[in-house]
Amino acid sequence: MDLGPSARASEYLSTVTAFMDAHVYPAEPTYAEQRRALTEQGTPHHLPPVVEELKEVARSQGLWNLFLPESTDPAHGLTVADYAHIAELTGRSIEIAPEAMNCSAPDTGNMEVLHMFGTHAQRAQWLEPLLDGRIRSGFAMTEPDVASSDATNIATRIERDGDDYVINGRKWWTTGALDPRCEILILMGKTDPTAETHRQQSMVLVPMDT
Picture: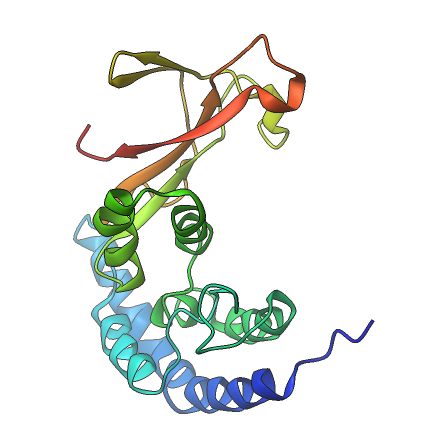
């Protein structure tokens, strides 16, 4: 099996490398200074302004949402294996490059879930602004009382109540939740404790203003 980058991925790698060299790495001292200032102001989870500037550059160079698989975004034509090479490269400036290219976790996985399983209304309300970089999202899985890396241990209950869902449980280490731009969580919980072990869990959308 050939896991090397495709011809298309190689073109993107060249563009990303140039973007990193010309814009991202030189911005690291400014980022650090702005991050320090935000922390001193009591707003450590706000985004340093320099990243917003880099987003515009990334957009203009077509380096936006590259994580989307080719089946979702044929314009990029990247496979997961192709994107892995790009992710390795952007990981060299992990706090800046992925965010500048709208390829940060947990948004990447959350956007794929919304694309695959969301209703038209959910996509319009949450996926479109995520793809545009106007909001952020969070992922709520980890719980304090169970080994949460194994999803079968998740204990939070999700129960249907008419047209609503009632969620009972405790989450912590919710990735992305402290970002002031976070407007939606994808939460994992147990919907059917009587089902086969690996079919008891599901995920629901939880707006941050719930």
